[in-house]
Image (cartoon, rainbow, N blue to C red; front, side):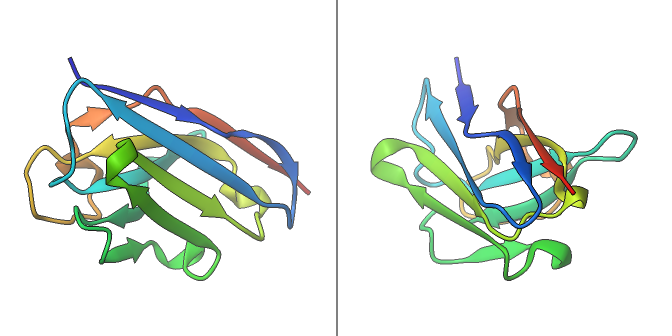
Length: 125
């Protein structure tokens, strides 16, 4: 059974940084894209960052471009999200997700089949 475990969320002030981690277990994901998806209260889920299977191609939603960095370590089955210059509007539950179809990269939440439980990120002004 596939399991994704996120960590690293918390309460921070605007301008602070956080690093989220997500470790996969149950099977390997070395050929699958991984993503960080967030959901703010009353809003739909959105992919904020995605990384291809090799870690060579990354994509970001426009409002985190230049502030967030996604990376992965396939040897540790772990994906990271470094978040700098956090803003109150970044407040959300952040989920780690894996696309079950190998060798593609999507910014659509519906393309990701495996999800973690999420970690809360709260940014105060």
